[in-house]
Amino acid sequence: MLKRFEVTNFKGFNEKFVLDLSRTKSYEFNNHCVSSDIVRFAQCYGPNGSGKSNLGLAILDIVTHLTDNHVNKRSYSNYLNALSSLPTASFRYVFVFGEGEVIYEYSKSDRSTVVKESLYIDGELYIQLDREVDNAPIVRLLGTESLVLDDIKESKISIVKFVAKNSLLSKNKVNEKFLKFIDFVEHMLYFRSLQDTSFIGFKPVGEEILDFFAKNDLVSDFEKFLRDMGINYELTAIEDTDSEQSTIGVKFGNKVKRLPEIASTGTKALAVFYYWYKRITLEDRPSFIFIDEFDAFYHFKISETISNMLANAGGHQIMLTTHNTGLFSNEISRPDCNFVLADNSINPIYLLTKKELRNAHNIEKIYRAGGFDVV
Image (tube, rainbow, N blue to C red; front, side):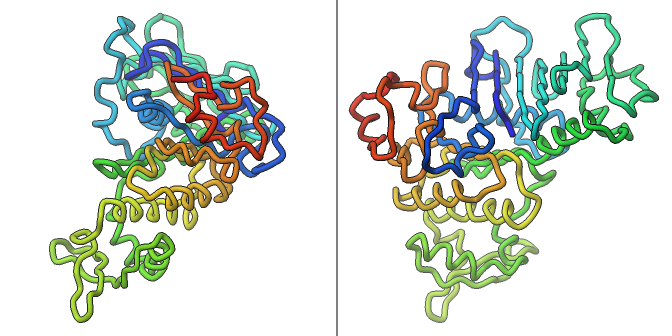
């Protein structure tokens, strides 16, 4: 799991920004939101422009150079902070796998150019490369002794990715933790459904959402999902005349209309959510999921329903961003799993008040009354 994340000089983060998911308390409710004293299900609230979207992009930046998975390149334009004179952005991740800890630090001048890297396993340095100095790269994992690193410093690529792709690692506890780290990054996912339906990570390429529903016999299940959300459509799989793929139609008596032509913005957003929800439950399970403005087009009851679905999904580490303070409810989550992002910092809400927050407290009411020390 991701325990701690730090970023400096990336997009809106000029100064060092820290997300610490280990600052949990011993609340005796909604324990499924925490795993091994690390937040498993986090909800992040913040004003417009506070950096919620950039936080997701910063966390998923690791995917852009350690994997071959999909990356929305437009999301990583204006890579460095405009106010900074520093030539690189810096990132630091702390992962926990059972009893082991992996720390990965790196700096990049843009999305694809890695300048420095260091990887520590249980406090010991195992991989390091600094393209700004004349020192030789360090690779100390068993099984990498014959790895040829002559040209690695002259390239832009990650030495960690190079080791992962080109080594036959010996079986030992250190290498096991390294491979768990690589697998975790391979299965990280970011998605949103605002102006676009962009995503980062988890899969090498995208696919058409409605075609996925039709080809995987999910049309009836999707119809039931929409009905549970209060949208009563009778759906059917049809051929898309504009492509060679299938799509979904809505029945109106003897007529059938293509869903994309008649669906509201909220219904389209629900289709995006349902697609990823099925992806993460039917196939390879993502390790970390960041859903940006997940409920931007939802009725508040739908927001609560979906938030509960994700909180109880299990097996994933999930972070949502939202403007809906109604989700700051102890019926859904708990005070150490609800975060407020403001003034270049992010904190669980229990740290923003001297009041001892309990299960019976109305968190939204306290927030709206100014009971937390944030803007």
